[in-house]
Length: 246
Image (cartoon, rainbow, N blue to C red; front, side, top):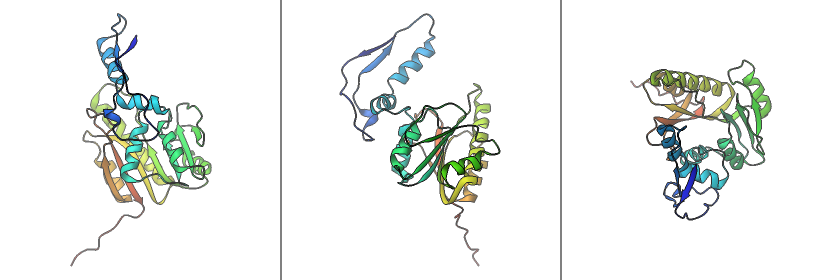
């Protein structure tokens, strides 16, 4: 049973990112049950008292991940009206909600996932594996051309073995980067989630060879205890090659 205690300060407003983590809200406690393990109870307690989960409920986002993209956009100015954008691993749609609002009715957003996703206004949803051979062509057809921005919040399901999970995550992220480079316009941007753990050098080398700028970022909405971070690669096909010095 979920029970609320204390008084909160009411709803937050719109897309404001100021002070989300410090907003005063109703705290929630989770009653112990015989069929619920203590670790599950603690996870539920953390989840329901997460300020970004609460903000997502209040502001109508499908996931707390929306705030990660909002914070990345605030830092790197990723989203603009009229852009053509691809959202890989889009379900349940938190990032797509942010993108659709930012690019407006003259922009184009295609959300792709192997999981079903509830319809969203202004979003073309393709339920398929991005690794399929025809995926890039199908995506470009849906976009009406190549993409200005490819977003990837992909992560495979966990096996519970940290080293194995890290390698699987990095393999998937490298495949997402390869996909992005097939569909991006020159000068385009690729943003991907990855997890630090020692197997990311191949990905970084690939991005640095193909993009003019590659930066790490950890949005405030990413949990501090998680090794999750993001790579923002900008200027596809415009890598600056230094002239040799004499």
